[in-house]
Length: 397
Image (cartoon, rainbow, N blue to C red; front, side, top):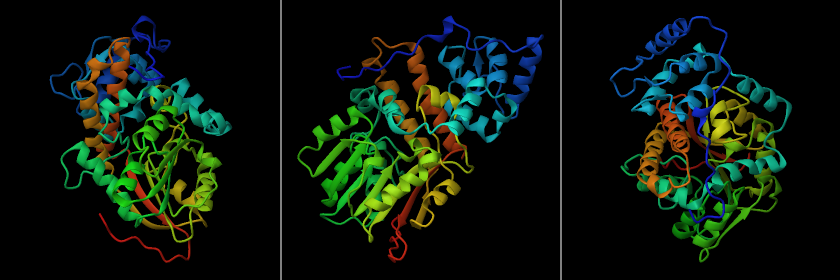
C-alpha cells in the first residue's frame, strides 16, 4: 500500500472469547435449538450443500443464540465456522427471518440507546466513517471497484459486466435530472468522483462534490484536474450556494434520522427553483434508528438506512416526489462482482494484514449481497423538485 492511511489490521479474535457464555447448563440443548432454527431456512450444520454452515468451534451455537448477528460475524472472522456460499446462506437466513430467534446483544441495545440519546452523525462524528472506511486506501478500493471507482449499486438492465452496469447507472442519473451542458451540479457524498467525472466528460456539466474522506478528495481532484470538477472535504451542512441540480449517491445512509430534515433543508436552499434533486440510497421497509451491530462496529460506524416514511417526512413541504425507482436486486450482482475483485486482488494487500480482515471483508460483501437477494434491503433512486415548478422527469428506465 502506498496511500497515506494504510488499512488497519483487525486483531485475530480467536485468541479471546467473543462474549461471556450464556447461563445454559446443557450445550446440546442449544445446539439442537440452533439446528432446528437453521432448518427453517433449509440450512444444515456440516452439510454438503454450498449454503450449509460448517462449524469448527461448537461454542458458536451458544454465542449466536445469546448475542445475535454480532456474534455470528465475529465468530466467522475468527474462523469458527465457514460457508462456501455466504451470500446464499444469508439470503436464506433473512428470507426465513431467523434473526427473530436469536437474542439482542448488549452492544445492539447500547447502539439503540445511543442513537436515541445522541445525534451520532453530528459535527466531527460525520467524519468518522471517512477515516475508518473510505480512507482505507485508494489502491485498495481501486482494486475492488470499477475503473471509475463507483462505490454504489450498478444498474444491470441490459448489461453483463460491473463496468457497464456502473456506467449505465451514472448515465441514468444524468438523464433523470435532465442534465444540460454548462449546468452547475452539486454531488453530496461524491466518493472518488465517479459521477462528477462522468457528468463533466459526457454532458459538459460543472460539478462540485463534497466528501468526508481526505483520500477520496485527493484522488478525485487529481484524476479530474483537467475537467470542471471540484471535490471538497466538507460536511454537507456547510453548503449554501446555488446549483442547477443536486445529486446524492450512496451517502444518505450516513446522515442519520435526526438529521434527515436538516439534510433536505440544505438541499432545498442550494437547489435552484427549476432544478431536480436525485437521491440514490439504500433503504428498508420499516423505520429504524440504528444499523446492524456488526456492520456498525466493523464497516460503517454511525450509519443507518432510511424508510420511505422517514424520507417523505423529511421532505414534507420542501419537495414533491416526481419519481421513485427501486432496483435493489441489482445490488446483488454488484456486491458479488466487488467480492470477486477483492478476492482476486487480495495478494496485493495481504502483507501486514490479518486473516480476520480478509474474512471480515468477504463477510461484509457477501452478507449484503444475500440481504438484497432476500429483499431485506432495497435500493431507491428518488427524483424530487420544488413545489409549483411543474417539473416531471421523462421516463428513462
